Length: 187
Image: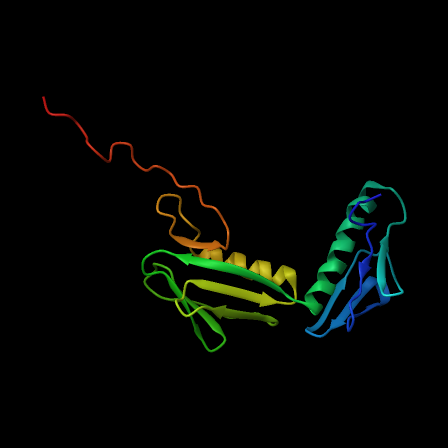
């Protein structure tokens, strides 16, 4: 039995979950509503403030989908109740971020500022110094994808560490050219 799949998902106060036709799961909560179609073979039962996910057999495909379906349901419940955030840090001289209305604008060493439009359900925040970007929303996949796109704009480079990185991400520094100091000796 899947260790993750067999765990029940508890529904907090104010969160409701309904399973529709062909496993269309709808979760409503204080922060909004999420819908996702889960695999048709997986059984989803709501009873007594808990959601239980089960599989019909021990086939390899069913085992793989069992834990996935339970994790997706848990992420939807957490998203509509608390939401998700990803924090990015901007490092480097002249690198900074700002807001124009709802849009995120980043100056990251290009000849022009790069503007990111927030997809539906996503909000950006930037600190006063323009060094910390917070991406928040109720859908974990969309929040992670948006944070990855922002980081991809200028990933941290290994020599000086400049770029956009996740908060707490460790970038290993390289030594650089070995012949930088000294050179050929005089005879």
